Amino acid sequence: MPEVLTAPLVVEFPFTRSLGPVQSAFLTGLRERTVLGVTASDGRVVVPPTEYDPVTAEEIRELVEVGSHGTVTTWAWNPSPRRGQPLATPFAWVLVRLDGADTALLHALDAPGPDAVRTGMRVRVRWAAQRTGAITDIACFEPDDSPAGDSEPAPHSGEFADAVTGITTPARLDYTYSPGRAQSRYIQALSDHKTIGERCPSCRKVYVPPRGACPTCGVATDTQVEVGPRGTVTTFCIVNIKARHSANLDIEVPYVYAHIALDGADLALHARIGGIPYDRVRMGLRVEPVWTEHGRFPDHYRPTGEPDADYDSYKELI
Image (cartoon, rainbow, N blue to C red; front, side, top):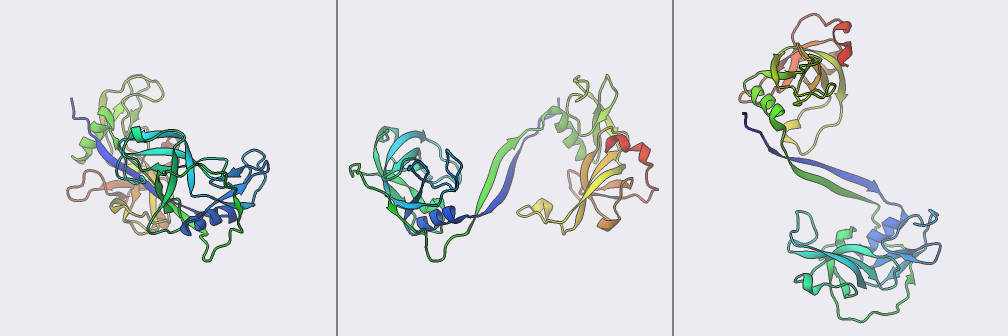
């Protein structure tokens, strides 16, 4: 039985958005150690402020300043902080209703342990030493001995010098992927410059990469079939945006990614096309794999020089 492979994978991209007047004022206010909320149509003060009323969906713009002290309304202990979370040591996630607000703000509470946290406890903002106009300008909350007050929110113009007008938030997912037995065999065969698929015992179709079962018939596919190495471009796209933060995709644009039906396969796989100008790639182009030294998979596919395949020979694989 072949070794089942695993590999750490990361999906990461920066999410960039522009800010409207409400969010701009809120984040700029944090930079200036000021917490702003917005008054909803029913008179409630919403913190963090929203641009539209959470009940009526009306646009709301009446900004008010609330306190930097508040009360924990509910909480959960986090014993094992992860990369990118507010604190590197165990902490509590808390919902805090700031003085003058009617809704709660989610953030971290720096506490020595879960026994030190309770609903109804008083807390205050701990400001970050360096503030840029982001929710992380609140480094966390910390326990506070001050009594709950009846402070009223104060009207605020929302105007600050050098307002924050946009933010970029990194989104990242770290996970371990296991391809299973069928695809492990496929990956291991690639290291020997071979491409294998699996044949369905019912419909007789050969699937590449193999999935361990026929997606049409639902039966196990345990018969390996070597396919290719040559194939036919069935369809393709021209990539004009350069991939960032990836050594494996440091390729000059534009370039072509294509679906390729390998000879003997009944499912097209995707790969990069090289060795030909991007604007000369076409459906029906015959291609073959190019391997780099010590490469475990083809670096790209290049034209074979053969005549283009007839459309009827690959139309079912588009």
